[in-house]
Length: 505
Image (cartoon, rainbow, N blue to C red; front, side, top):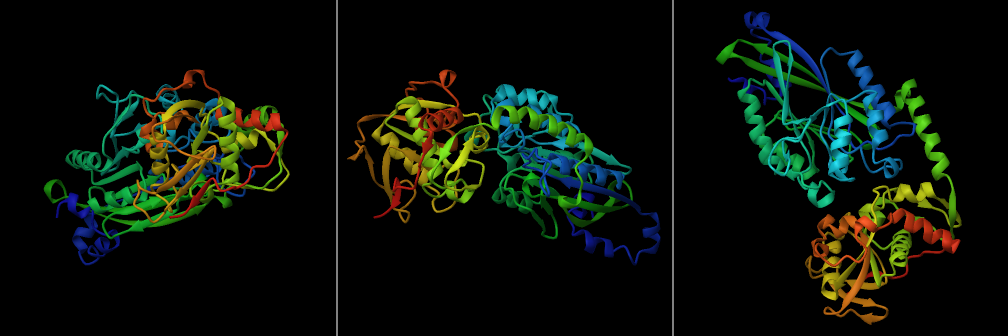
């Protein structure tokens, strides 16, 4: 059998075949190496029980100290969103990562949240091998500092690693002129190239959702899939391909300890491998001193700016992911009311996926700048579009298209009362829309406050692209600042779920 085929065999079965071949077993060469994966890391704090940059680093240092051949892979999402990133656009993230930089870094969609220029700057400052085989400049050239793949040689064993960034990034983030090709197609081409270069084992480090991960697994193009994006701890082995994704914020990392056995040379070369899975709970790791010192400095810098009350919220708030992505929420009403007031618009709409803290607040809560920036960490600004009534309906249809599944596009709104039929086909779910108590006129013109991400067509709000923008992004204010100003001016606010978005026939 060729190494290309044998590398896809279930390692444990393949190793058993050696036990009866005494002469061959004596000539075999055994190589051990470890794949370690962490992704979707945003938490700077060091006082939590588990997780964060510090404990991810502690695990990486421990694994490298106890294994000779280690590839520490990071499949993206860290520059944004986080509290401090809303202020420094992820500069502190690079400083934290560089204390124990991943060997391989593949950008996730959140690496592009602050635009192409910041993306290039942050990636240029990161002390990792940068991979993204499906990302190119507008002219088709490879982005500076990046490569499609890298070949590791552990003695006689060659391990090829491919990087794939999220191919839907232009829809969900702000990559500017950067171009993205289909991940699966790129994977197959890149894997074939590595096999031709002599790779015994091929690994893809990919920022992709579980549906796309499964396509990569089922393609059989690679032997290992190390993924990010879903925030879920998941390992799998279908007998041919091994999959691993760590829990978000480094609550758990996954280590794959691989033993490869090499026999023969040239066309007779066979490589069999076996994997031992380790799910590593970071609660058992202490915060390294260098991280504690750096974070303390960052926290002190933040505290002076952010731990300041802006007013009282008299009613309870709920910003949990499932809430803001599936239904009307008091916090969504507060944010969109503030946006609408800030630009004096008829209506407002923002995407539930942009509300990020994932927490509940008690009534009569003294809300701070920190709280608001934690909820709105992307640095988005409030713009004012002129839209037809038909455009508004199309926007609502887009936001409701995945209901009842949780969707980042789900519309949190102000100035409207919307009734929709969740049983109708996507695109035909809006039953009625009232603005100022009157039915919406598809031919009339309305002004809408929204965020610059949606105005560029983010989250598939393509109906906003090219519309007259009365307050373009270059002149607009931060959404978070609009919310702070709204609460501060009112002193006490009492947002509540009031029937802005209801179901009906």
